[in-house]
Image (cartoon, rainbow, N blue to C red; front, side, top):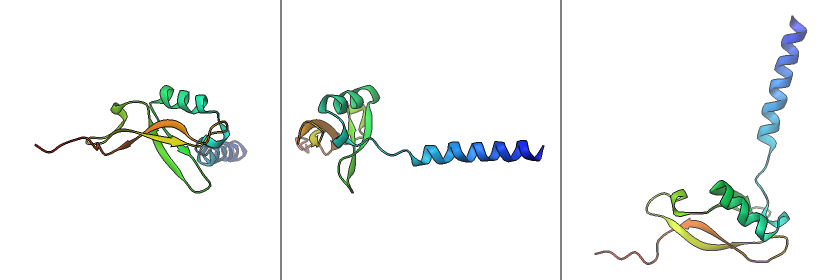
Length: 97
């Protein structure tokens, strides 16, 4: 009984630790097409873009909180220095009436 409980705890800890240890996808290890496909498939993705940098990239406006909208950005990928993607940002063309 004690052995079974110890094994259950050990397995639970191993699973929890594995989930925590998983990192963000790194744009630099993927092709531009792979990055763009991942964003479209998931709607929004947090990507590592450099040794100490990361950001959230989106497929459509529905993944941005109001008043933010998708704005053009770029990320480094394995095959391109600047792969075009979108992130949430301020609407620069919104005029106060």
